[in-house]
Amino acid sequence: MYTPAMTDMDVRAAARELDVSERTLRRWLREGRLDAYRVGGRIRIPARAVRDARSPYQATDAVGTEMSERAAKVDASLTARRAAAAGQMDEIAARSRAGRSADDSSERMIRLLRDEGEARHG
Image (cartoon, rainbow, N blue to C red):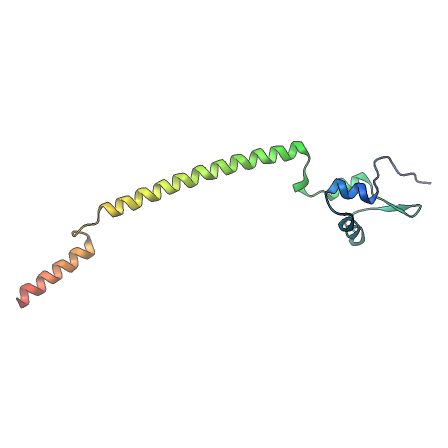
């Protein structure tokens, strides 16, 4: 006869461990997402099944901390890159505004054509 190991859990404990409701956990059992067995009419869930059911986002504290630190570094890097790109865009905009005058190519062409037209008809 099989006796449940101390690490096997009931529905309430497994739900708490996975941070889901008991209703969700029972649905997962029906869908076959978790291994379970019955002992005396009670559902028991092996700790191994609970560990396997954890999503990568419910990582252990050490892994979660490492992931948070990595995310913070990536965020800082992206913020720095965005700031650099914004600076370059501002510089390009400033250069293009500074060169604008009556001598810009389109305005210059219009003025020359107008002057030519007046000289011919004038």
